[in-house]
Structures are given as structure tokens and as C-alpha cells.
Image (cartoon, rainbow, N blue to C red; front, side):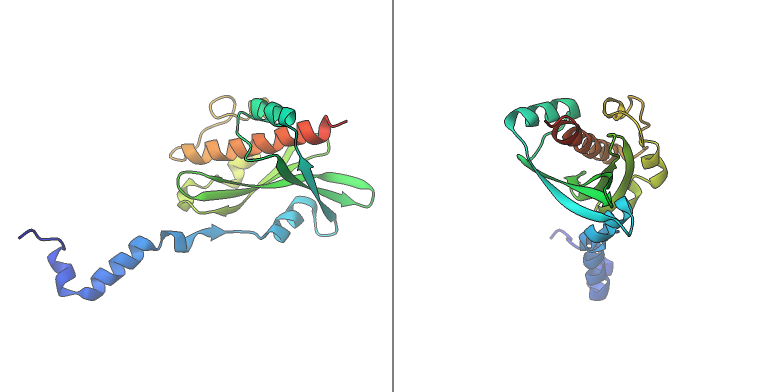
Amino acid sequence: MQRLLPRSFKRSPILLVLTLLLGLSGPLFANVYYSKEEALEIAFGKDSQVESVPLFLTDQQIEVIEKISQTKLEGSLYTLFKGMKGDRILGFAAIESQTVRTQAETLLVVISPSGELVNVEVLAFHEPTEYKPQKLWLEKLFKRPLDQLRAHHGVDAISGATLSVKSTLDQIRKVMAVYKVAIEEAP
């Protein structure tokens, strides 16, 4: 008869249970760093007013957004958040989620009123933390034009985190493209 469990597991059921619990605990240790409210405070500051800007994108807008961002939109409804201080627009932000490998990454992407990328925060990262893009790497993306936000085309890769880099850059390009087409170029 073939042995299915190592001898040490047969002697110690506690060791077997601990091993199973540790093996299944990956999703239990998912990292959520900021809530939506905290994220919008990071984007625009504590004393700002934030309003939701629902965008109902046309088929033509979706086509243009997908072409310039080289990513797929999930639908025609998209939400940006507009930060205001008095009458002054501070910028626009989006909260984007995407699967990296098998788990989700959620980002806050902040665009200035002139359309520049000014901040990116990782709000949640459910993959192993060693694959998480670090703040220093994200800061190197600030103020870059949309067409320069591609791995190996002016953006350094992160060793061992190729899928995280791709996911992060895809999400940033998508937000910038939505802003450009639906806000900046809107009639």
C-alpha cells in the first residue's frame, strides 16, 4: 500500500492540522491598506470636497480609450472622483481593481486638472507582498505621458514582479485615458 502522508503527520495530528491551516491561510492575510474614504483624503487632502463623477461612455469613447490605453474597459459606466477646494479643482481620482496573477490589486490613481499623473497608492494587494509595487517605483511614474507608461519602454521592470508591473501600468493608463477622453476632450 502506498503511503499518502509522511510518517510525522501520522504521529502528530496537530502538525497535520497546522500544515493545512498554513497552506490555506494565503487569502486570510490579504493586505488592505486604505478604505475608500482614506484613499480620497490621500488624493485631495482632509479639507477638500469630493464628488463622484459618473461617466456614461459612448461606444466611440470606449473604442478610443481602449486604443490609447491598450487595455479593455469592463463596461460603459465609469466613475471618477473630483476633488475641490472652494471653486478650485484639485484633480480627479479613480479607484481601480484588477487581477494580478490570481488575486486582486486595488489602486488609487490621481490625475491633476491638466491631465498629469500625480499620485498612485496601493489600496489593497492580495498577492504575496513581495510582488507589491513599492512607493519609490510608483513615484517614478508621476508626470509621465500616457504613451510612456509601458514596461521596458521608459518604465523599469521590477524583478520577480512582472505581472504586478503590467497590472499597475494597465490600470494607470486606463484611468489617464478615461480622463483624457471623457473629461479633458469632452464637449
